[in-house]
Length: 411
Image (cartoon, rainbow, N blue to C red):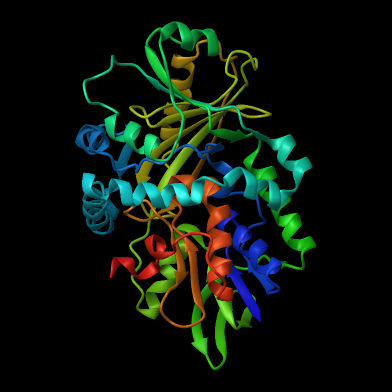
């Protein structure tokens, strides 16, 4: 059976890899080469195998109004995008209710827990060993602990048997010599990992997909429509035809679904990064993130990547690169020893759904399948998403309960 995968980022490539394993004929369409741009290239590089708490925790919701008042704060909304953003934010806030935390956490963990083993399977031991480090991550705090703060997250980690180690200032200094005095404490998550070059890892995955028989065409998709026996895909280079379509077009998936009457509440949470000259490995050996700043610092093979923030805007709206510049300034404030040098800056849209879970499964019309909406965790959760989608398409026993990710869950 022939399948067209729209999108050659990590979600589309993961789906293609597992479909080829199942004996499908697969073609991937994307205007860009794999690993050469987009969120699969410009992300934080953190593999969040030990992260199981929803982003919509009560503490985050309490801070949201203050963040929105700061034009360079962790969250911003373009005024022209408010008609789309406000309904999405209302759903996002409802999804953060304490009553749903365990349900969402279980669904996150089902996709995150096997990320290292699936990545190793998809790219091979040599590339995995060269580009992935399983050494943990620290969450840093610049305020003293508050009574009850973090209790929900701790309970969810305990639910899934995930280890976390509290760090005082002295312990932080042992891991990060030279870290700014403002950082008072932290939590070490030993089960986390990071990539030394996300783009290279994605390119190696594309090579394995090609070696398995997958084909690629650098074409922009204009529209999709059902036809007798399958689907017609309109591209800038003419029409393509397939029995099934997998829509993994990231933040652009919503626009391709709308003409079919499918209203997926997916928006672009645009993230930024600034790459700075690297610190010596001993000064920043593993990633550290600061939720109050919306900032993650990741040591990569060629640079120190400062990434984060959320800007809710149209995917193709002009970037506000001062947000990337602000990330670089915050990195230098937290680690004054970062060498001098102009940062390189980037912006890319994360495709996000309001409950923090991706859409995986058939979208309604037979033969139209979704694998999109992975938000902040695409590099972590897309490998298992592709495996789950391939099982659903083949009618095989799914490796996880597909219900939490069903595209029709929003009504």
